[in-house]
Amino acid sequence: MATNFLAHEKIWFDKFKYDDAERRFYEQMNGPVAGASRQENGASVILRDIARARENIQKSLAGSSGPGASSGPSGDHSELVVRIASLEVENQSLRGVVQELQQAISKLEARLNVLEKSSPGHRATTPQTQHVSPMRQVEPPAKKPATPAEDDEDDDIDLFGSDNEEEDKEAAQLREERLRQYAEKKAKKPALVAKSSILLDVKPWDDETDMAQLEACVRSIQLDGLVWGASKLVPVGYGIRKLQIQCVVEDDKVGTDLLEEEITKFEEHVQSVDIAAFNKI
Image (tube, rainbow, N blue to C red; front, side):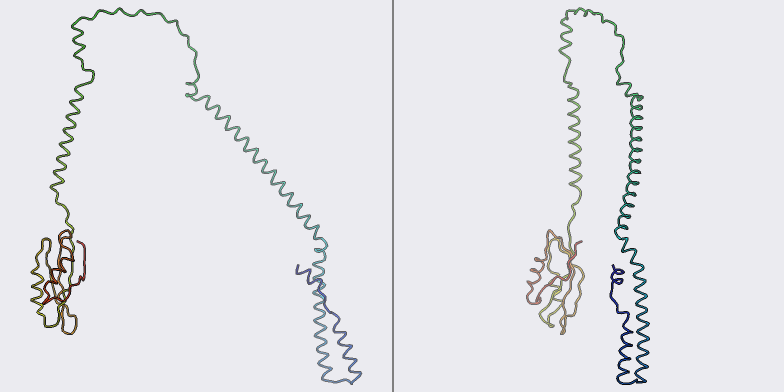
């Protein structure tokens, strides 16, 4: 597309001739000017070189695009013919492959038929004709009359198996005994008790509060499942210190609400109680 556009582009290659003619006309009218004539001569030489270069470019483009433009439809036709020929070759090769596959499948089917016929299972399924001799009639033996003693023996036979019933009873008793032992063993095993470690911050009213007396009041709280631990005084500010005390409680027996309620009963010494840390054991 670009070569065709450049080939048909209109360029004024003879412009330098018209420029020279115009310059001569004005020289004849006004007289020659040395400086101007020199500049115009230099400009005309440059324009002449540019025009020649453009002409060469146009000729080269026309030479390269001419045959292609003239043979455009024929080139497309030849390309189409080449593609059709390649498709025909590919089609023939695919047909050969399909024929080879069909032959291989037919050979495999023949081999499978031979193997099925020669297998022992196939032989077993084929009926074999055998000579069968005629059956002779056999007379059934005569029944003897049953005696009273034999009738009594038949009555003593237990058809439902009483021995099996006794074995089932023994197995049931053994199973019940083992279940009872397992239940007793499980009852003796101590149950796990859920415990928690709590760190409490007990704040006094002011710096004049007796912290030793405050700690004694806190430790005087005795509950089932409560064990007091270490304690220390932590400065808060302005000379005020708070009591930080550790305790371990059983979750089912002692809760944090109960602890806070018991400690805040000492209103003369305790301002508030906060839980600084709470960890499961």
